[in-house]
Length: 324
Image (cartoon, rainbow, N blue to C red; front, side, top):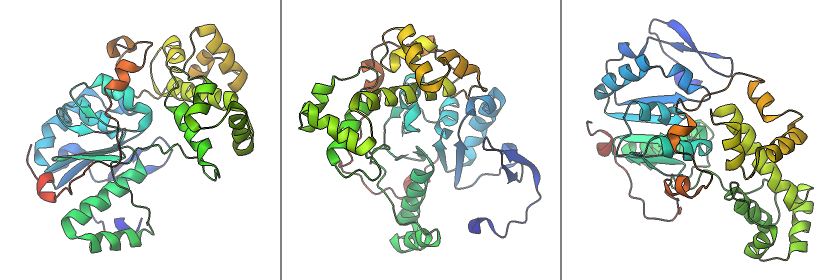
């Protein structure tokens, strides 16, 4: 933590993180006098700590800061306070659909990070580093941004408009395998026939089987099922959606078939998995409030698809310094 040296303010109670460590704190939000930016960083279980009192305090204190930012699940907290209304924003890719449904007044995009006037959001830790280097470069020049990156031995800066998930398999030698997995990942709710995936990739069904066996050690059907079940497990742990709704979102037409597949993979039923540990509630909103449907077309249409090649003007700090 070389960047944290030299702090001498009076310490108060540390802030516990979900990973078990604690971070030092100099006071609660009410002690903040205002600054260039207020950044909300959150992860699993943010709804448990984002109480009404905190949301009210955040809304009241926001006017003291020139810019507001959120990282990972932090945009959920900002949006609950109404501080992203009318802005473009992103959130971690696992939460994109629920976030877009919960906050229709926010222009949700699947970018790595987004800067919208005096609001900035990042989908995770690495995109947050990219975003901060972009802001440093915009304010202080590319040279200073390069020096900061060198200080952290960081040389993989990416443009914010790149999608959060590349679909690439680490070490995969054949891009057709990565392309096939990308197609699968984009159609988990309504699985695409393997023959159609093969045509999209430009191979026959037998060649597709061989690509998966060579690259993953399993066939495409098994790999596709694994993607769907892994998504189901994350949704069981991180949301309040019903087991039936999760099954539908993961491409299972009936609950019994979903339960059998889930038990074979994880040696427990979906309900047992939900009660195995406290649920990390990524949203306080009930499934019924999200107008969740078995078809993903409505939810998906709320999320602007990032092309990664559109013109993207350089954002200056004067834009971020605009008062609310």
